[in-house]
Image (cartoon, rainbow over all chains, first blue to last red; front, side, top):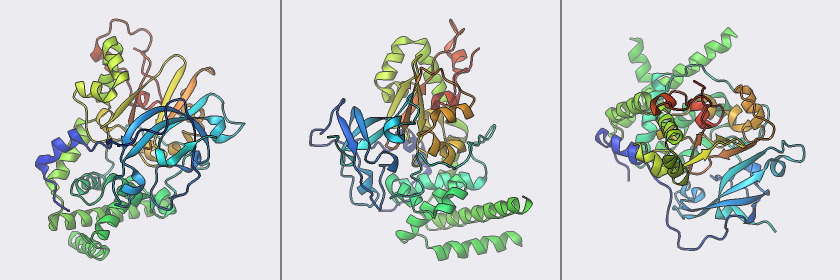
Length: 118
Length: 104
Length: 201
């Protein structure tokens, strides 16, 4: 449904925004401390799983709760909310043995993007 | 998609160029494009994931060689054409009209 | 060089014309209210900007209880100061310490906490920062004139979901007893992204 958003609504729109968190009926599959592997999946359509973490092992640092799933939402196939996690990868894991050991990368990964590390 | 937008870890994309005292908007068209994105979103033309998906489909050379808000323009025009609101033909015709009017 | 510059200017004038045409059509078809565009532009050009985030940081420095609330629930604590909404619906505050330095990037596009920092600068949205922040953060920091001691861990946060990150920079030396207003003057936008430090008085 298309509509014209009025000037009178701008202040509230800006102050409220569009939260993406959603209730998810199932329990999260992973918890902080779990070692996961980002799946080696290559969606030809929209995804927020970048190539640089695919196939790599990281540690779940937070179970963030349920969020709209971008991969289906971008195709107008529904929000399909699922659990999302903040996962920490070491530089060496992502960039190889010569990487600077003094940094880590933290990224948010939806449950469909990850699997247990072993 | 394995698009040009998925650039984490790429080499060779150049030095970081910081503009001193950068204005929020560099030109009037950036202002109007910013506003149109928010209003098209609020008007139901796309959700944020669709919008990002639209930008990812920009031809890579154009994506890298254009100003930021051109990415937004690409996605906006893609979606308003897809839902039948505004066609490319209408845009080109209107550009011609405006150009002729402003030259007069 | 001249010809390339001319080409860029010609291209930009075509882009400007195209934007004009699109707006004209959307307005004519009753899909966009141009007065709404005007309002949005005014908000983001004149009202919403990094001074908001600076106030959040200054309050956290001055008020230990606020700092605790801010680190526990960034969204609620930032909303206490009146900042909320579009591209800041869910805020996570990242504390810089003597052993940890946080840096934020959106490798896939340009996600940034608008209510606290306003709209992002071009360098944040462009290919060089987006590609290098996750693979060479020390090199990126060096380009910003920042050198960290070797022992300090750098945490690079890729804002690929709808969580929006605000870095809480370390409070500079020599700022004891300063008012929140004066402290806020020391907080730079870059320090809240994680590519700089707060200024010393």
